[in-house]
Length: 258
Image 1 (cartoon, rainbow, N blue to C red):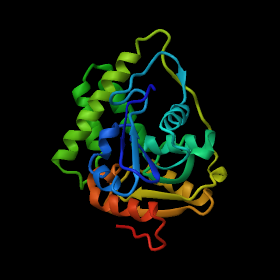
Image 2: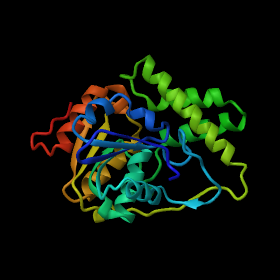
Image 3: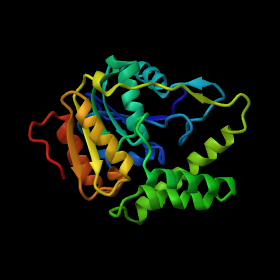
Image 4: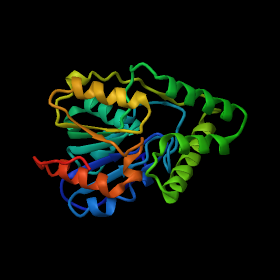
């Protein structure tokens, strides 16, 4: 099995997929309580944390299908943050039987017009990396993606995870052949499992646009806006996100928005 992962607890399976600025450590604040009620699996996707980025074509959804198969898990409730939300939608597209429900936290989605704030971020990150200023690129990511509720420990964790991602991904850039991520086209209107779309009031506009589109196009989707949240609510107010996840995953009809 290529993907590094943790597997905690017992009961109905929950698959936690990390953001692109993070790795599976981002779920540390919620896993102890979540695993009291569920079997919680959290992998490092390719190029993050302890998972390498081999020089080959791949799809993250296929990696997750293989992981669940190796663990004897038929299907799981899938919780994805940002990039992990995009991967969750790709898993629901390529391997729909694997996904019993979706919780999408400030999720990404291919094909949405980039907004000026995201374009400005990408240009500045590219400039810093081109200049060899990895420290500056790490700081930019922490400043951009962690909302005002994030404390010093959250900032330190995001910095550590982003630095590790840069180490793995920059090393892979010189491989021959290079790793190639296969494009998976997602049609939100074809998603047929219970879906909760969570947005942050302080998030970049692109991700607020994505949340609005998914809330419109995924049949029966529930939309939750966290007015206090930036892009990484599970690191900004872990207790509030844990309460939300427990409500959704237990199929509580009185789900609240903390």
